[in-house]
Length: 170
Image (tube, rainbow, N blue to C red; front, side, top):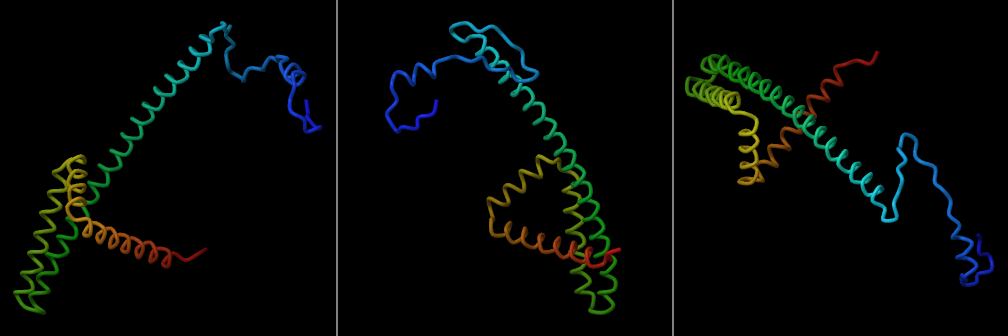
């Protein structure tokens, strides 16, 4: 009932609004008889909450399993890439010996050994240990972590940009 006379509501307004109408159930919902204390509604709400909790737990576990799978795959790829970098440094050490001297070739070999050792560490550790190590590094040296993240972001951006530039539009 529309109140167009801008008067305070009176008893007539409340009586007119108190006529009860029956709501149409949502499609797929089951109708249950309600008691005066609403226990059937409370049971339905509790059942819905439990179903949501069960499904959320199931989907959360599936997401965690998928993330772990991706992390394991990334760890394997990173280990292979580090091995390739170590091999490149080792191969380049001979050329450095010839052009710059044995001292600088030794530096290249030392760098290759360090990269190879790091690759072995990455391969040997499980994902949880790698995450703990990364967390500890960030807590110990946040400036180094931010600098490393910026450097990696720059490299990835350059790689993506060069890939886009090299791929001609057809």
